[in-house]
Amino acid sequence: MSVCTVVGAQWGDEGKGKIVDLLAENADIIARWGGGPNAGHTVVVKNEKFVLHHIPSGILNPKTINLLGAGVVIDPIVLLKEVDGLVARGIEVEGRLFLDPRAHCIFSYHQRLDAAQEKVAKIGTTKRGIGPAYTDKYARFGIRIGDFSNESHLTARLKAECERMNHQLKQVYGESPMDIQTVLDEILPLRTKIARWIRDVSLELNFGLKQGKNILLEGAQGTLLDINFGTYPFVTSSESIAGGASAGLGLGPKHLTEVIGVAKAYVTRVGNGPFPTEETSEIGEQLRHYGSEFGSTTGRPRRCGWWDNVVANYAVRVNGLTAWAITKLDILCGFPKIHYCTAYDTPYGLTTEFPTDGQILAQVKPIYETVEGWEGPIHHCRTFEALPKAAQNYIQMIEQLTQTPVKYISVGEKRDETIVR
Image (tube, rainbow, N blue to C red; front, side, top):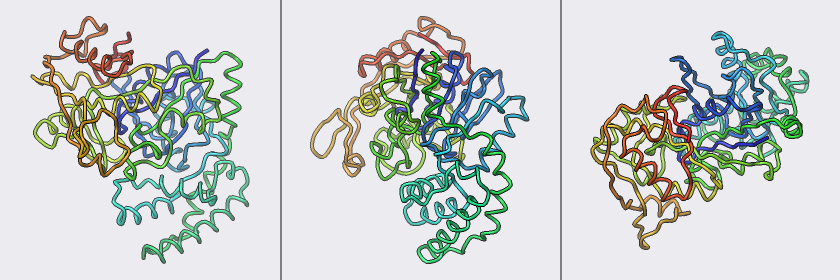
């Protein structure tokens, strides 16, 4: 029995979906603990691409049970479209997907408010309603998945929340109000479909532990988007570090046996906020082009830069990483020289520790070292020794600087284009 937790170790988009899909082969239960449909996990199986927003990537392995925990915010419309899309492609979902009744819901009025707030705050959100849904949760106005069990109760709650939200949209942001009947017509027909998937996720996971099941916990976004430990305010609205798994699933932290940090062999970021190793030159464009660096949820171009070891060591510390999964190593093929950041030059001197102050982070200058690049392709490599020597050296550099082993190396987008050490 094992409980393996997979977290993003940068600003999200690290390739967690592929790693979860790979590890699902040995898992019985897969559970997601936070975030909403702002996540976009891309998995390629036998040349067929799947982009998942709500459902854990393990759904593509036919023997797994997939759970969405209490810490997730769920858009019922998006979820059902995703389910229908999977079923249309031959993926069995019924009896394999369950939702915790304590998970909060996203509705169209959250998306309207998100868009209105983004005009003012300019955080760079996906405008999927994530922030307003979590705001309602903590302000104790939220509607939860469990409310779908009772139609009259759900109807009354939706009407009340639409009225409250309309007041905010009109009085605070000068926006036109929502039509309440339209919201009811969107959601109420989905009630019975959602209600049949309700199950106590905490109970399921702890029962699975007693049965000796292998459990895989899937994070969303990345360490530097965590609401507490990310580059605030340019963050998501939930816990995306490993500690959030326990809180979002009702699974005691003593049960976590392995924490795998997923990181690209370089770094990307979507949205606004500081990014010390960002390359705005031709190199950044090359990384974006070679890596197809466009958001799987929004399509926005990702900002690209070199490996940042200050970020990497921060991720090791706050997550308690036991191993790395390095993705997109193949994208670095063909660069004659590869740079990596080992420290920051700040207004207060050199540091190898990640600043807690966003204003300082915005002023730092990365201190780079350089290694030789290598030629590709490397998609065919299935052992570490089969990699070009310079690529081996690059991986070993990451291990040495972070004092954390690299257990998985992705050399292509397909499931089998992965080295397991």
